[in-house]
Length: 537
Image (cartoon, rainbow, N blue to C red; front, side):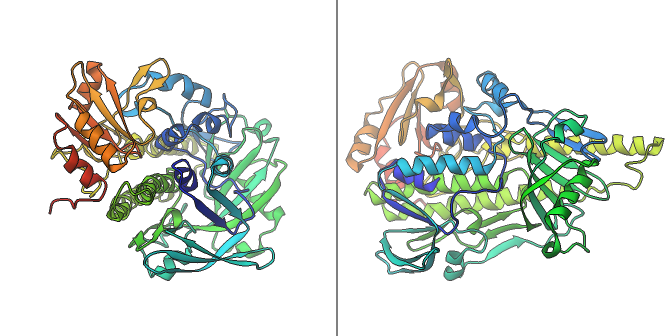
């Protein structure tokens, strides 16, 4: 994602990754609406929405004792086709340019790679790893090695970004440490987990329930969650390991039996890959940057994967850092602008890991009673109560407009506050607000045309209402600084009412940077937003 953000702005970058290619395993499976809005900004949202599940496959979250026995509860969500049809009719909390999409990260990575490799100046190199780096103050020297034959090269760059995972060598060399919670023990989604990527083409014939995107088994024997990968029989299955189960001794046959226990039926299974992992993390690094070296993704925040927040938080790291690096390298902003990356992204990581931990607690600490699977009155009552709880949990975890759209950068040096107070931060509620520091309020301005579609590729100055103030001072100051700024007029009264000011300045990452009633303070505003003037004490 960062390669795309840099390359489309004309910045040359070299990407090295020791893996042989993009992901084979499904990994993250939920692309949130805000991430889809960024993909729309890059012009790839429709391409990504066409991948993964068939267009009419339900994206429900369903809870079962076992997949082929009792359905306990279900939170229904639109299919990809319905999401396309409904998005332009929604207002309020879910007023958005894009709705979420359930697609495996393996498909998304391939699309991002394809587009990055088309960009001039972007060099994508799989099968290479970084072995050392040195920040000399005016550049970064990076030693890289090809896995296949040990060939070594030294690269000299203006900046280094370590998106190198939870064991990040870059983070370790910088001496940064994770803080937060780890090793949390739960009945489920805490401790040792086992991931199995598998093919079971007869699954939908063996299961008497409607298909779902996310399938959760809830019983005392084999708790698991399983995402449908292609809607035809490929699944990403994750189960809690028992204390007596040794991940190093699990064979393909034993992995298949784990899955079949959760199904409750002897479904033919082909194991494509398997590995262990650890749930129970809510960790954020103490720093995200030092000198010319930055960190992003799992290298600085580690989640238990509830709510799909890890992957989506990582995407926004790249979106945030990409335009800032480009602006500094082009001389459009002072290097001090880069200090806002940690100031903005670290609080969001703390916020998002906290939300994910609460979802994990809600699911993992809720335990099945012994009679849950009995064919008895007690069993039926236990299933009714479990279903009520799990369905409410599913709504709380997956109907999250507040988390999706409500992340803010209040207090950042790259935001020009107008002194107003933003709406409260809540997971399941979102109140659109143009208070500087947050996502711009969204509205549809034409048939299939999002307000965001009218924004320029970099800075956008919205001139709102039938008689907006003269915006010339902003445009002239932007030209003097070398900023690409687009003035966009929208006379509709409802847009002016949403933004509560006739002028609003939108950053390249589609964040409200400033709003006001006249353009007279344009030099001071842009000096602050480009790192040329410090924020007030």
